[in-house]
Amino acid sequence: MLQRVNPGNKPLADYRSIIRRELYDEIVDLSQRLEGRRVLHVSATSFGGGVAEILYTLVPLMRDVGLQTEWDIMYGAEAFFNVTKSFHNALQGADYELTVEDRAIYEEYNRQSAEAIQKAGEDWDIMFVHDPQPALIKHFSGGLSPETKWIWRCHPDLSTPNRQVLDYLMPYIADYDAQIYTMREYTPPDVELPGLTLIPPAIDPLSPKNMALSGEDATYIVGQFGVDVERPFLLQVSRFDPWKDPLGVIDVYRSVKEEIPEVQLVLVGSMAHDDPEGWDYWQKTVNYADGDPDIFLFSNLTNVGSIEVNAFQSKADVVIQKSIREGFGLVVTEALWKARPLVAGRVGGIPMQVDGGGGILIDTIPEAAAACTKILKDPDFARQMGRQGKEHVREHYLTPRLLRDDLLLFAKLLGT
Ligand code: UDP
Image 1: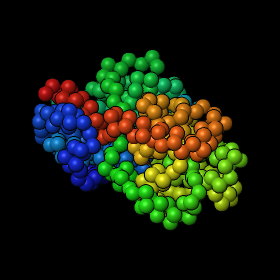
Image 2 (image 1 turned 45 degrees about the vertical axis):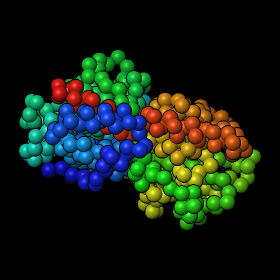
Image 3 (image 1 turned 135 degrees about the horizontal axis):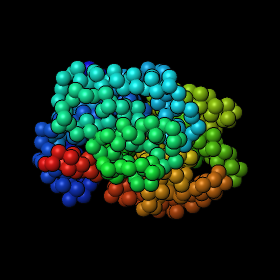
């Protein structure tokens, strides 16, 4: 059997006071139609990045509403994650030569994972496969029941992909009963997608990462990390990855500091198991910070877990997300939910995420610096942005809405 994740319990009833009544009722109605159905989620990691973040909430909620839901982590080792990270970068447009060796590594881990699922001998109504890493599991899963419906969930933006990797993967992905993308703009060009379903991700308002923290508690936590809580700070929370542009964030901070010398910068990054590039980029960022005592770099490996991320996001004067490519930046929605003013790259899902206000979209470093300076100098403007952003998230991007959309798709596929 693959490694099974235990994501704990979450009662839907706890969300009742946060979401609209109609949404709650809709979920209850759908869950009655799907009672007892069996769902297996498969992803590459249970730790770090957006997919794990989402599944830690979605899986317990699916269980709570009556579906027999499990979450397995596929087999993987360094060689495999090197290949899949290259795939991930290539699918977002990076140069990459797809070699026979890389294909063999990729296929072998998918084959072994599919075999382990079959050997476990469980029956699933829905196989819910997340992202490119396990995408070939369906291909190698000849032994599963023909009744099983297969969903492939794509998180990254595939609108400007490296053609070699896309052409290699697409026939396997087209074979799924449904392919979920965050938005139409992310779907790959010139590819037929008969099972296309559009569902944006969401955040959990009750998780330790997003639950309400008092200003006092947030300040207390941030202060413990050596950040001067009497002075403003800019924050980016992201993996250390070129697409998240931490070096660009340092440039933005340096430019803001010319006008507001007391400003500080906090960069928080998680090191994911499936992201071997992370350490190189962390080192690059440390070098680029060049010993500036007002730049702070933290990661999950230096004790910054969910509560700490929550505290930094709740306390930040400006949250930056200077992504160059982005799927749906969960961190953007996390910051808006905490009513923080946001400055973010005009890429991927971000414009849709800040559609209701709460963020200033930027294309360049000078634009980002000007936006941060404006927010820091005008607290009324900052407060108003924060309020707008929060309401937009409440309406569109909290997990119960994602749960409803997934259940609707299950009901459609299973004909219930
Ligand atoms: N995250 C975290 N600690 C960190 C960095 C990131 O907990 O040090 C979380 C972040 O809060 C968010 C997720 O990891 O929930 C990243 O998701 P996102 O969609 O923003 O980016 P991805 O890494 O999936 O590209």
